[in-house]
Amino acid sequence: AQPTRIAPSLLAADFARLGEEVKNVVASGADWIHFDVMDNHYVPNLTMGPMVCEALRPHTDAPIDVHLMVEPVDAIIPQFAKAGANIITFHPEASRHPDRTLALIREHGCKAGLVFNPATPLDWMDHVMEKLDVILLMSVNPGFGGQAFIPETLRKLALARGKIDAWKNSGGQGIALEVDGGVKIDNIAAIRAAGADTFVAGSAIFGQPDYKTVIDALRAEIAK
Ligand code: DX5
Ligand code: ZN
Image 1 (cartoon, rainbow, N blue to C red):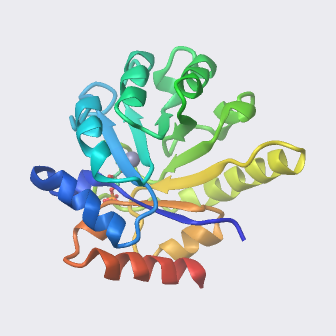
Image 2 (spheres, rainbow, N blue to C red):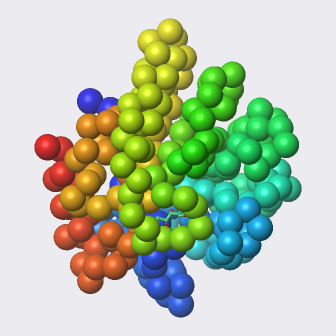
């Protein structure tokens, strides 16, 4: 079976105690740390930049999964790579040249991926497959945590899973399939069944007093 990963989103963490939150969530079983970067331009909200990533880097060995909700994209990539990011994903319509941006991310030693908003067609991936390490499907419109999962994402996930598997079966590299937005204990089994292997969860995890209890429950649902 493919590996599955839980990626808690720091967007829902206590920003006054981020280092401690990262340590707690990794000790509770998190696989990746999902790091949401918003610029008040591509999305109507403002979060954290490379300096916060750099400050968190010594607090964990877990991969830092940087989700760029910024426009333009390219200039910030070297800074995040230098700050210790492991994975960098971006929204292709926010980059003038997505193929070049994917190459730039890998040149800086990070895994690269595209993010698809609910209405963004999957064909943005078709001609850059060999440059992808991750596909991230948004199951809410980006900009805020705590929104409801958009059910249409399940059909889109199945389509993305088909493209990724076809690529692999024709000799291509493996590509992770990540979902972001409204992932909860009561829907993660369906999201897994539709083909996701990596699950971002913000409010579902950081909104609870005991992170291990939630992460264990999420994993138990995935294993069903
Ligand atoms: C939304 C962010 C998500 C968000 C998910 O723009 O990309 O990562 O934090 O939060 P929840 O899990 O609360 O929907
Ligand atoms: Zn995100």
